Image (cartoon, rainbow, N blue to C red; front, side):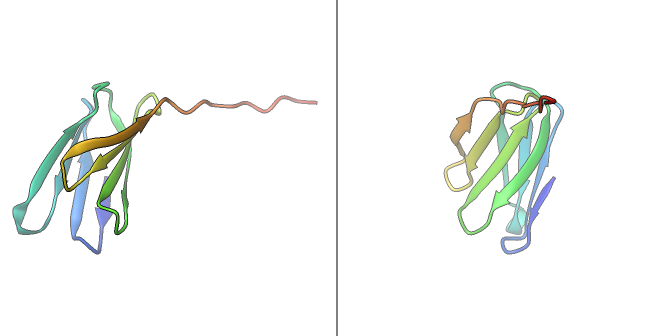
Length: 85
């Protein structure tokens, strides 16, 4: 879940990869992760009209709220382990 105080906008992520965005005047937008994996992180980019979401495999998606389209995505983040020396 993410909330943008400036825009009075709430984003909710589901277990099937759907992101629902609710705004003023009962505006609702829906985005779907192509992976259909659970949404584990959401964050609005203030004053940019974008929403970041991350799926269960750590793939990052950036959504354009004005066009209701996927702006960009990145491959899953690698988890690095420190080796003992």
